[in-house]
Image 1 (cartoon, rainbow, N blue to C red):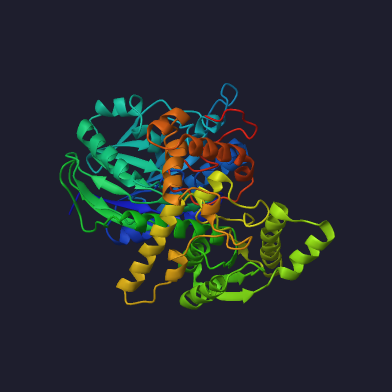
Image 2 (image 1 turned 90 degrees about the horizontal axis):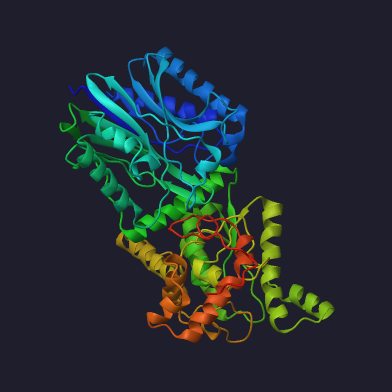
Length: 548
């Protein structure tokens, strides 16, 4: 029998639901103990969910979280689990609140024998990308170490292992056998490999095993993917939990090098990771905000088809309500492709023609040209929001990252909605995801959910006769490459042109990106999957004369 059987407890908390989150933690410990675990490690801020943003500035909220953690220690003892060491993340109040800019710390407590036997506060508080922790937390100073069953443990929290100095430097002289790392690390494409490499390097450079537990679940526009791992002192991966699902991985620890595990999940391929992130993000947004169903426009195009399929995978086809809203310019294939999609997925579909409504506005206001085109999109938006009000659905908006970049959407029209499943997915990746999802179904002997015609036909908003997106935009492969250079890599106009892009095209796209910021600022949130998501990562002034 190993000295320590450690449970890597990868859970899905709800921000603000302190009692519910800790009840879940108690149940996880009870189940883990039945499997022989005598130590359970949870993720960062699991007691309150993460990130809590300005809830950290409410003294009553932080105090309630601290009280609940102490209550959990007592509950463990009452359930004959006082012998199990539990390491749990939560906010805590600082002692002297008169000399700091904030009142709380991002903390981890060690529970044993019915009480808190140690507490650690996060040292490095990130204030980049999606994080603004330095504004709401006070950093810690000291490394926490403790002994349990003859093994020496150290505790760190997330960003602490991404920065040199501080607790990592202290870890080198601590002689710890195992480093326990609590994390709230959101998913990004290719981030799982970076995390694994970081953990392996931490283990080898400090000659200690590392247990890395990450949260899982959607929180607003963030998706936590789990993928918790345990590596020994040589940097060898001993255990790996599942991605995008609550999971508990068990590791037997005799020493920093003698560790064993019975389970190790495999990593999904890129398209599978992205699809799982989008599905989990939508599922948790729907369930955690009390919705039962979603409504979205089905145009027969690729974007709405992918969004409907994500929704069906997330909450069940029976809870997805599609609406076909043909205008005088809608093609026959748009209607038939929407019908085909609905039949393949098994989602609800109703048809609400918009011609009479558009004509009434055009007659009264005398609209033509762009105003008339946008009016069609706004009628569709009004229908979807009306159905949301009448029937209680969450409205999904189906715009992709490429369209949002250049403003290729109608504000208060096709942009209306409470959640945008593919907001951070570039157009070319939308096509790849559709092909991947169809292939997954075919491999299982099932009907491919997305009609081939929706994938292969030229994309069009169909707001005027014979319109296609490429009438006013470059080819999407070229456009996505250009936007990647400008948005993701932050290259200048001159640097982009030096890569071989046409100067006039570069100037036009940069201009479109700049003048569309006001639209993006008002848009719905959606799952972040890249390192430069609009809203969380890229924050630009609306009034902006710099276009280089």
